[in-house]
Length: 367
Ligand code: ATP
Image 1: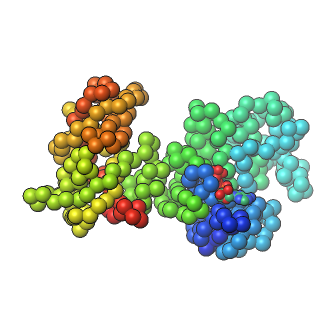
Image 2: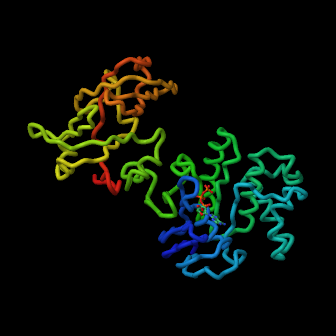
Image 3: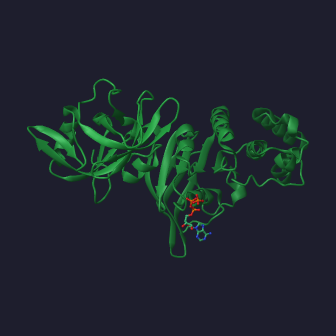
């Protein structure tokens, strides 16, 4: 059993509460990603599990064993660091074999494991090289190989892709997903990059200021963010937010931002009507804002006008940086056929089926 449980875990560094009452149960064979901005406590959460930091309060369990006082080497985990931490004077083979040699694993067993890991990672031809004779991507694979040979119950990854260039990061993401499938072991991964989290995780734990904000599958997190922070953090470009009021005119519920009014379709209004008259934060993702006439069918007519500030052509879509008449900025991801020039006014439509409202005080999702 390689499930992992954080049970009311705290980590304090003097006055700083790096991890604040963390409760997470990670299933055996899950690929869980901790994600959040710099300083949110994700690395500390991982280091507590690895035994590299001492817990201030609470329990961490691997399987059904509390590991708070178990030395790192006896936790049956292996960690891949951002820096890779390879020994420069050793060959790739010896780097991978090193931990096993320390544990006095028989030579033939070491050889079998190193060769098997090298085969999985396609680095068999590099075993005699020294780290400085490798590319960044190859070094990264050696670091992963060193973890694989340990055959741990849980793999920990601390931003292992951040030293790679953009293209290699994308390739390596897919390799790690494949590796997870092949090894069928628990992976716990830390990153500040929400794209990495979205593409690899079976579940994502979003953290901010040491506090877990939400833990969910990537799709559910995207569609049902618990609060403004999660809504803004997951998705690129970020969700647009407007201070708004929910008003009812002639039996029709509308969102009024000051800069525009947009009708709420009846199926959504059923849920939202209870907040009538209230101030809300209105959230809408860039891909749910369309420029006329390229509006998908089924979206209610609305008369939103905004001025183009900047256009970014992405090939299969255009990012439009827009300004409303009351000077609020927002981003729309629109059809590439849209002709838009800075300074021009466009008519837009919003897919309200995917809209969100949040409480302005608590910033928690209302619906
Ligand atoms: P990053 O992505 O920048 O690594 P993070 O989300 O991983 O950030 P942590 O490294 O876990 O965040 O840090 C959480 C908080 O704890 C930060 O405020 C950090 O300054 C503080 N912290 C971390 N390690 C220590 C330490 N050894 N001593 C004092 N404060 C620390």
